[in-house]
Image (cartoon, rainbow, N blue to C red):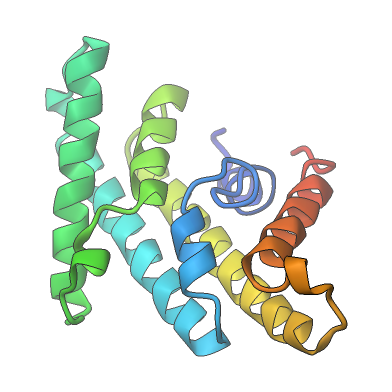
Length: 177
């Protein structure tokens, strides 16, 4: 993946963190009750991904070679990105918001596994953040429409949301770039 458009297409569509990799499902289930809340949560995670990618780029030369310290390093970078994101966006600090999002940690681990380095780190984080934001806004819109649809009582709420996310994921699995 050296072409910028290839990275964008792969991270937004075929490698979407929520739908394809299953990362960040807490944000999907918690913050998609309305579009504004979903956009705010998506923007927060996207900024966290960008900060994490920049930190990974700057500190990339000190990454240990062994797998166990390497995962610890990625967790440390994700924690620092989470703290810096809440400070940059001047958000209220709650335990929920302070926790490290699994999408940020997963993105950092995916970048490390695929060997993405340098500016491509930032480009991949930007594309993954756009894909993450896009899925949250789309799911918030679908969730709002599902509230008006005649859904059977046992499937109302979270079950139909997860079924819909699964159907969207299966649709995206047909694309390969």
